[in-house]
Length: 502
Image (cartoon, rainbow, N blue to C red; front, side):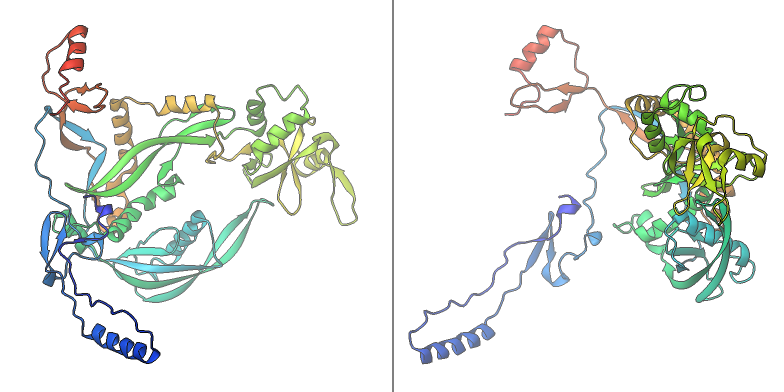
């Protein structure tokens, strides 16, 4: 029986005494006496406890307390044996064996004030805290952080509860200005992380998986990747992992990898698998617009439908300015002007003195706008700021979350379709690039990861026999069947179906 269906153990031969009720009398006084009598009889009634409980195929004495209430305590039936059919072989799996650390791990609760919703920003705050206080207040500990409320260390911190002040430069996406902001970070000890039950599970001495301990180790091995790569779900992406491939219409595919620490029959194993997803290509805005529209936008004016299409594609996209040399301020696009750049004017002071966008960029930055027939990007939500398209470039590493068209889906599938040997080389290259043996967090927590693929014994099964009988649409594996002609096959299917049973 599957574990998920084993919600309640069936009770066999469960019996109890039932005291039959008597017919009510018409008189109220008699009714009252009968009611009192029935209450006394119910109080004296006894219930016979079951003598045995049936769980699966095993009988458990009732005096032992019966099966555990939690399904985690129920043991699966042992495998009856190993298969013998097919040809034996050895295959490689995209798993890398890991050694369980021999250290005490500790869990701390983290509260950041004011509250931050972005995991990326939370990680930046904790990284700054560790950089400033590691050698003083944190006793040289290098913690692993889950991006929300939990912090883990290999050993105790010098305190049970403490509050830290962290200053961090925060970028204003509307104004493109970095502003220093102070955060209060409260760290409080919660509990020790128990690795004992994880060891028992790996040694096959207990049935359920201790997910809490496994999750801590998984967070530790993901910590450095969170700092190096772009995280999407449980996967990481970067142009360094695999060369980006164009998908068309201003998009590209970035290669990445999925990483997860799992318990196996051979012990702890780090599962690595390759993946790809769509990102916005880091082009100049004019080149991006040309790809979106599929035409030259420098020499031709834009129509109203073109503006709508451009606005829809660029809204919410991060851009950086290129007209200020090494100063690359970043903004998030909120809209597109309905007028071309040459017609745009705006107030430069409180007296409402007006100046054109072309004059402003020439006087302020010495930048001459060449394509004044194109509209400007609008950035910022409270106050509209105008940026010429030719002075902007799309920021790298922005995932595309909208629906892909058929051409883009086909291009992405071509990128992800690999032969086993190619996929093996990519997985090994990713593990080599991650360099887990040099990972400071893995060293801190005492986790060692092998850099070799795990070998597993396997068997190549014979081809399945197609049972096309109308009453038996099932498959059965038959070893070493002789080759038959089409007429003989048809005769077997119609008369001597090997899948049929008496």
